Image (cartoon, rainbow, N blue to C red; front, top):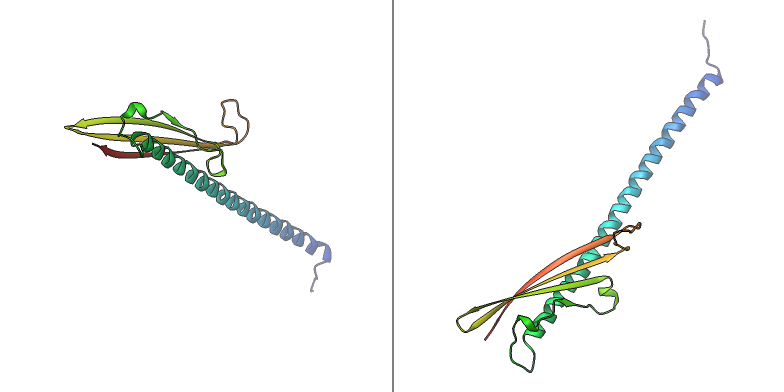
Length: 147
């Protein structure tokens, strides 16, 4: 004798398949959100890294301008300030630059090593900060010779 299944026993399997599909779609959506978040963070790091690098380059340029004035005699490391304040513009926002200078004299020539270290940050990176913080450092070293 042939027994047919009732519609009540078949409804339970459709419910399980539906729940499985919903769980799989949820996991795919969560993975996609994580990928987008990682890409966003990577882009932010790239932008702030470029800002820090350009700030460090500008600090080194400012130190070179102090060492070798356009209408003057080359100076020594005492004429180079230990910090450079970036302009208050979009590209330098949140950046600070420290500069060090070392001089070595060989014979009659002086060789200068300028180290410019830039730190750019956003999000309130203080010690008591409760917000997300992004801090990027870049360092540039320049060597120059004077007479």
